[in-house]
Amino acid sequence: MKALFVHDHIFIKYNNKYYSKGKFTYSVLSYYLKYCNNLTVIGRFKEVNDMPLDAGLSEGENIKVIGVPGLLSKNGVLNRTVIKGVIKNEIASSHFVISRLPSELGLLANHLANKINKPILNEMVASPFDCLWYRGDLMAKLYAGILSYKVKKCLKNAENVIYVTERYLQEKYPCTNNVIGISDARVNISGNIKKLKKDSKLRIGIIGNPAIKLKGVEVLLRAFNKLSKEKYILSIVGGSLDSTLEKEMSLNENIEQKGIISNRDILNEWFLSVDIYIQPSYTEGLPRAVIEAMSFNIPVIGSDVGGMSEIVNEKNLFKAGDYKSIVNKVLDLNDGNNYISSSQYSHCISKKFTGDLDTRKEAYIQSFINSIY
Image 1 (tube, rainbow, N blue to C red):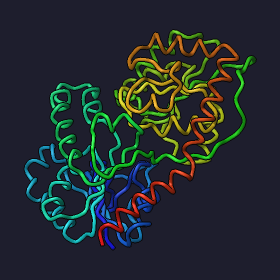
Image 2 (tube, rainbow, N blue to C red; image 1 turned 90 degrees about the horizontal axis):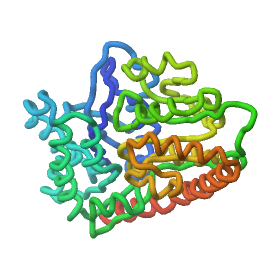
Image 3 (cartoon, rainbow, N blue to C red; image 1 turned 90 degrees about the vertical axis):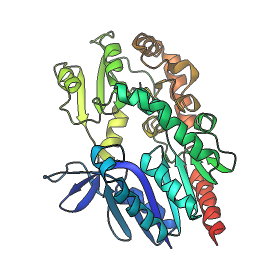
């Protein structure tokens, strides 16, 4: 059985091979080989002249990647007929299509697959409106409503949809047919309930690319600058360390910039060193990094966006962009009882994201596969 996976993910093309910085490496994509013998992946790409650092190979045994221009890019507009032909041919030769939304390529794949009654499994992972509206540029804001409408229309009559949230995306982008709400994040519970340190600085952690406005790192920096330099350290995982904001932060001796950490053991060690995790994003689906932080029993503070309220304690939520509220939430955790209570909350929530979810998701997808025949 052959499947086609379509998404706007930007692969890195080097020496005629495709790589990804974490999200769609071969090990991630191979999950779908549980349900097919061969998988073809269509996504956007950027060609580079040097071997990409901290990127994993996306292709491998029984997995092939096809890179195409983004549909809204100049090259994509000029070659839309060609791109459409590539997707159409791959759909025709596949038994079913997996469309990850929001994405322009995913929407096009839906349209083409529906025309020939090819089975489609949609994965809805984020709010298209929020992703574009908070990106920062005028064109993104103007297009946010259009993309949101297109995704709503696509999902309204979709036959099968996997949402990564329990409520948020379902309410914003509803589907009345065969749906399930289930995150793709899986964690192992680590260590004991944390207690507030008294004899050393507290490490505030975040995973996110500072160069991407949506991640809210600039807001977190404003909050951090209001906190005592004698008591707190800010530790950031992610980014390429060459953006204007990252260069600015490099001058602050109380800020650690780790860059991308692709080694799981090293990332686990980082989590173990974090005392408070903060996710200040302007938009999220159900953030994996937050769930991972919770699995280490770390108290979590998060912006009230997307599915964040489904996992973060209500008293630790703040309005996106409100740096003063972040400061107050951090100071609240100076109380030892509040800190322990937040650690216990993280422990309880993270227990929901274990292997039991795999059983439910696999049953859902297998039911979809069985319906094809």
